Amino acid sequence: MLPNVYTLSPAALCALRARAADDPALQPALARLREEADAALQQAPVSVMDKELVPPSGDKHDYMSFGPYWWPDPEKEDGLPFIRRDGEVYPGSQAGDRQALGTVIAGVETLALAYWYTRNEAYATHAARLLRVFFLDAETRMNPHLEYGQAIPGRVLGRGVGIIDTGGLPRLVDAIGLLAASPAWTPTDQAGMVAWCAAYLHWLLTSAHGIDEWRAANNHGTYYDMQVAALALFVGQTDLARQVLAESTVRRIEPQIEPDGSQPHELARTKALSYSIMNLSGMFALAALGEKVGLDLWRYVPLHGGGLRAALDWLLPYADPVVEWPYPQIVPMSRAALFPLLYRGAMVYRDPAYDAAVAKLPQEEIVAHRARLLYAAPRR
Image 1 (cartoon, rainbow, N blue to C red):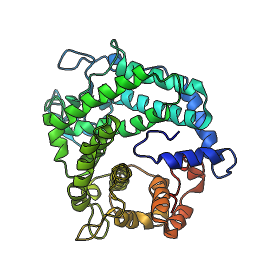
Image 2: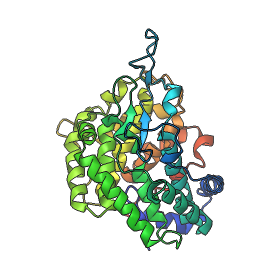
Image 3: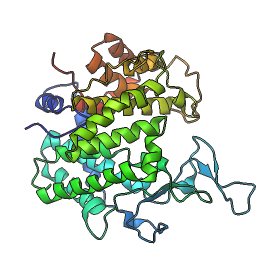
Image 4: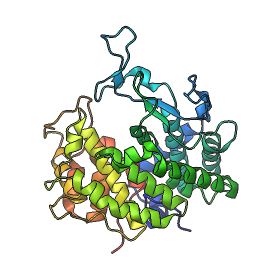
């Protein structure tokens, strides 16, 4: 049975699972996945109730987080209002729920994929437990909104840009699709997650924060569309997903990718390589979602030029570690971070240039990369 996934190909996942046991190219990635899933089995459930802070609403079920790049003003005795230092993470910003949410998404994703490949029910059982505690159980569930996402002390209690905190939800609903065959994930669980995602989707579409993020011109707009489209497909609102993805061609791809393939909004950041990869990864997810509604965003080219393939080609030379990155990158980053984009690009575009670029990456960092278990070339 094909799994209900949205940013991944059901047919590719089935083909990969069929050959995983006998394909030497997949063995390192499969072994690492098992190791990571076994570690995730030891992960205790976490929830929004674990934080020491209380949101402005007084309800600890409400998610809250702080802008990571905002620091106390050294010229003010109380540090307020905080000031921005792009790319530099303030340690105090880790208070709140961002880390817990990220832990749940990563854990469920790992366990669900390991279950898909091994059919070990222990993986599915624990993934279901993590999901129930964070999203479904009345005592511990997160309320489906982000009114207090990425607050800035002394400035705002929450912002539209906080919606980037839930950028992993498309991966989460894919993971839920991989759990469907397990008795550990019940129809009641599925209905509960659909209801939660439908409520959050409504908030994304109607709240002031959601509307602010819809207007964003950089990676925030990309990840907003990605969340809306994925959640719309998950809850059965296919027409909404198609509308959002069709509009993404002119709202996201055209203004964010120059004719030469560069992404100027991301190159202006202090971590330009990180953000260029992040934004294009989000656009690749939009293209994968587009496949579900009959849209080919992979090959969409605006009248002025550009598009996803141009953006990938622009990054291509930097797969070679000896080629200097000429833009700011204040945090060291391995060129292996390009691997998922290049690997998926090779599958989609069937261009040997991407395989050649992959060969220049640090092989010890990509031989067991999880992307090998997620993507396969489409049949022609």
